[in-house]
Every structure is written in structure tokens, then in C-alpha cells.
Length: 385
Image (cartoon, rainbow, N blue to C red; front, side, top):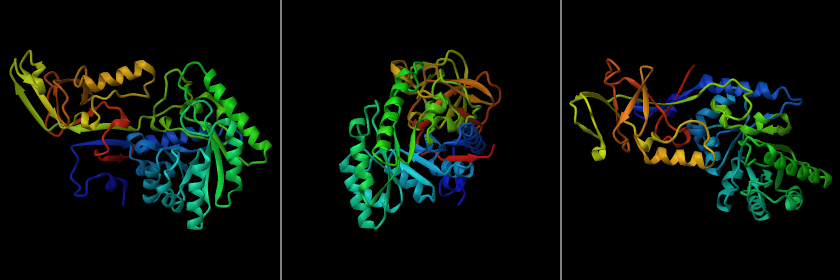
């Protein structure tokens, strides 16, 4: 079955709205990252992060494209995401960042998912499931070096790593941490986390424990340079053609891999004074040609597009995008931007095409949206180029 067959509805109805994913861009970005990593000796492995449905691209299909580009290790957040990849035929290593709930462990071990261990209780659940399955479960130990979420505290890392190393049902495949402030202009907090992590790794070495694959660099860490690369890196955003923050070094020439598309379903002429949309908040000031689009906030339209928002300013922008549906929004038709008029509804909105020239039902429209909030209902169409 091809990627397009997986992405299209079962009756192969040509979609009205969809996410267009560029295979060429994904391949280009992956190869650009691999080439950058080759400047280190030895080159670290690339663990491709395909969490959140591969940042809205479609995780199984994206993993296949990246596999063909030379990537052999993937990471996701949840056990469900990991299992989805495995059941879709992804045979590569798959790391789940979130530690599993005990009732999930048996299936995950059976499927060879690499599991995260943060405490002794989690280790015990994994060991029990592995013993029952007659398999050795591969785990990575997560260390909380300052993010304050998941992970063993540095003072307890050696004790937990020793318990893993001594467990006959479990193999320690790696040790990792995650940076909480790598997007900021001030690198000092990230340097501090790195120093804590290096100290933990030294403690493990001193205790005679093989750490396996050591990794800490997310996309921002990759851009900050080889000091952060270690044995492997975990880029996500970069693979999809976006820089995580404008202040970070531009080490790569990236290509955008994602577009939200829809098609015009109606074109109509209305007189001046016509209210448009719920609440009648917009009223035409002139004779207007309207194009109706079958897309709305349920699909992710009106949620702020672009790279990762950060801080209070980013949160406010995101909330504005959610609350002011239709305000200042534009879409692109025939290479030209046209304004959205009236409220953006759940699955319908209208745009003013009066000044655009000839448009017709079926014409393609590019819609701005935040990738990870785009509806999973929308088919993902993988295209060459």
C-alpha cells in the first residue's frame, strides 16, 4: 500500500481539504542534518523525532520517507505513538519519551519499543513484563538536569542506573536529558544543564556503568554545535523545515515540508450591506465576490502558524489566534493573498475575492495554520518535489 493510499479516504474520494507533505523537502532536510553531523568525528546518530503525528505531517508515512533518507532511529512522546509506528511496519528503533503506565508495558516490550525509565517503580514494571515475555527490554535512562518534568534527579542517577545494569531482564541502551531553555538567546542555562548531565555521565563511568547512547540535543541543541551532540541528537522541528527560534545559528538550508490546502466550494456575488458569517460581525461595504472554503477552526485554521511560540508573547499570540477567528486572517489563491471575512466557523469560512479576477469552484487555496494543531482528520497527501 502506498503512502497516498494510506492518506486518502477508503473510497478514494478526492479530498476537499488536506495537508500536502513534500517528500523531497523531508528528504532534503534529513540529508542536510546528516551532512552537518558528519562534521563531527565520530558522527552522532540522528534520532528523528516524529511525535505529535510527525509535527502534523503523518507519523508512519513520514517515518518511511526518513528511513529512505538514511535514518534508522525514531522517537515519539507516548507509547501509543510508538506502537502506531511499529504496527505500520517501521522496523527501526523507536524510543518513547514518556515512561509507560504498567498496563502498557507488556505490549510495548513485545513490540521491541525502547522505553524510558525515570524511577525504580517504572523499572520494576518493565522488568516484570520482560521476564514474562522471555525478552530483554531495552531502556534509556532519563535524567532531570533542570527541566523539572520527567527524569531521575542527578543525585539518584547512579543508583537507578545500577539497578538497570543489574537487572537480567533489562538492557541499558542509553542515557539522556532534555533542555528547557535552549531556545533563548542566553545560552547559560543550557550550558548549566549540559554541565550537570556531563557530571552524571562521569559518575556513571566512575561506577563502572556503561551509559550506552548519550544524547541531549533537541533541534536547538543541534544548532548550538558539537558540544551538545554527544552520541546522538534528537531533532524534530528542523526535519520539517523550520528553525525553532530566530536567534539560533542558521547552520542549515531547510525546505518547508508542509502546507494546509483546501478548495473553493462556492463563488457568489453579494451586494453591499450583506452580513457574512455567524453574528453578522462583518458586513460588506461594497458589491463583493465571496469564495466559500470548507475549512475552519476544527481543522486548525486561525491557530497561529509559524515556528514554536515561546514566553508570554507567544502564548498571547496563540490565544489571539484562537479567539479572534477571522481577524486579519488571509489565505492564498493563485499566488495572491486574499482576506478572510466574517467569523471562521468550525468547518466553513468565507474570503473576499473581489479583486482577484476569475476564480472558480475547485480552485486550490493555501491556508495558514499551525502544523501540530491541524486536524488529524485531514488526509495527508505525500507529494514528490
